[in-house]
Amino acid sequence: MRIAALTTVLLLVAGCSHTVGGQSQGSSTTAASSSAPTSGNKPSTAPAPGAAISDVIRWIEAGHPADPARYHVVTRDGATTQLGNDIAFTLPAVPEGRPVACTTDSKHTGNALVCLVDLANPPPKPDTAYGEWQGGWVVFDGMTLQIGAARGDPGPFVNGNGPELADGDTLSYDDYRCRAGQAGLFCVNYAHQSAVRVSGAGIEQFGCLRSVPPPDGVGVAFGC
Image (cartoon, rainbow, N blue to C red; front, top):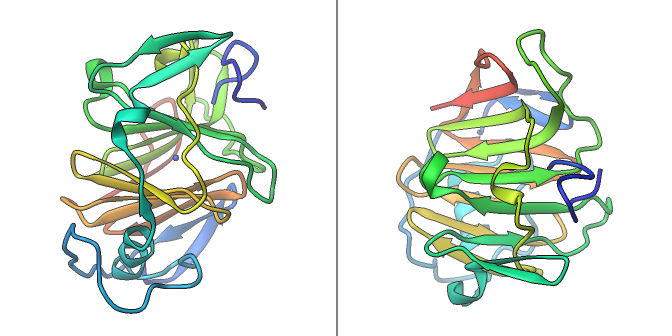
């Protein structure tokens, strides 16, 4: 799949885990963290699947803050659209060469982060889904993480994708902070002490997120 235009393709625990579409599932114990950057030695490697939420937060906060003002626009075929208070960004090329684009859509999903990713092993289309299946459609709102959706339209990606969030840069909005990098996109929701890694290799959940039965039309779901 390619992110460039959704008309071509539509595109987000310390405990035991198993995998679905390259992502681990399971339970975790959480550790509280301030939303302010941590001090001391910065972590040198990205958190592994099953890492404690405190380690995920440390990794994200060790990045370089980007200017949020740059990420309130999207571009498609040379045309730029202003997003108002919404944000949008894409990831630079990662080792698996699978693109990731993310945005918010406050009119329809509140402050949830919606990402479209070319997953190597997307979840299969469930019997409850009708329409074109987009296995790499990811929605993370802090309390829930959902992967895969039946989409008949490009939704919030209709006007294109946001600017690139450079490797090592972080972007903050509302209760969220995200960091881009070679290991994928890591995003934390401080209010719920939950986090997600979005990458073409798979989706990983952290913190309070645990596997739950997916609602109709969704491939895989987690909840706090």
